Length: 392
Ligand SMILES: Cc1cc2nc3c(=O)[nH]c(=O)nc-3n(C[C@H](O)[C@H](O)[C@H](O)COP(=O)(O)OP(=O)(O)OC[C@H]3O[C@@H](n4cnc5c(N)ncnc54)[C@H](O)[C@@H]3O)c2cc1C
Image (cartoon, rainbow, N blue to C red; front, side, top):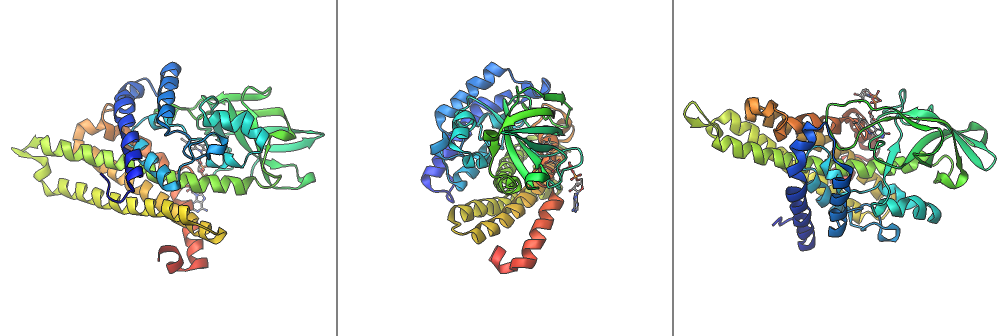
């Protein structure tokens, strides 16, 4: 029982935890040793179970097929799915929160099927020369009559190998209003191709292919949001995703501390359990303390979002989300490093949870705005709003 959570959220937590521990964690080593491969049929069966539990698509309102949970409830779900390696937590699918801004026709074609697990979405922003600065797109969308012609290449498109549509961020033809605009593109459209499937440090169930768009024609009905509104929508997505990254880092750190503590209390060296050695205690104590701090920050961020009433409230939460993502992701990496050390040589074996998290958590400091970018956001918000407006 978590006394900080309302009873219904604690119940939700137990539901997700049971699903993670019974259905997902037992698959970790098999998936790791298979380079991240999970049979499509088993994946579909597991997704159906997550759906039957009503824990899927928590980011989307019921009106578009989601389960419409509060931010706090979404943090509960993400904290629990963060406790499993190899991206198996993504079985509890949750399409990007910003899809709720789609038009009614787009909802019926893409968003509702994605929310119900019939289709799968990916999001393509990053390019070879546009990473942290997502405003300088080389991918263009040029208006031609009723259609748009999209050309460019996108990097690191997470789930681009298992999705059937993509939201692609483009520089809009300057002739009709420069800026950034988003488009829905079906991945089987003529001219769309996965040109490379690079290998990464982790072995997640989804890959991150490079996608090429060559002379891809889409009707204006595929435009997501207004012309020039793309960055506004993407920023809203980043804000949400940063909070959920923080939540998943909590789950990962909790599992690491728990397993490392258990191991330390059994492992005997020099005639004594290593848990009795103060250098081991320091690693566990620091980890637990930092996890608690990260947990308070992340839940406070979600609750502040649930309570936000104005645009200014939401901007303050944006800064809180940056602080939570920064702190929780760096905390989880420190915890993983300490856990590997506590497990010793076992912690360097791929069958060990600490080894897998040690590799997998590294990207949490890079994607959705690196730690450096979060620090820049936090600093400018501090200059503008002052200390008290941000932390009380
Ligand atoms: C596994 C994985 C999955 C991904 N999935 C997706 C996805 O699904 N969709 C998508 O669009 N993108 C995705 N990305 C891309 C990811 O968001 C970018 O990698 C990230 O934004 C950083 O961009 P970059 O790699 O080009 O690094 P760069 O922007 O080139 O940065 C390189 C280094 O410079 C630092 N830096 C940059 N600017 C500053 C500054 N102003 N001050 C100080 N330091 C700075 C960065 O912090 C970093 O340390 C994914 C990346 C990975 C690794």
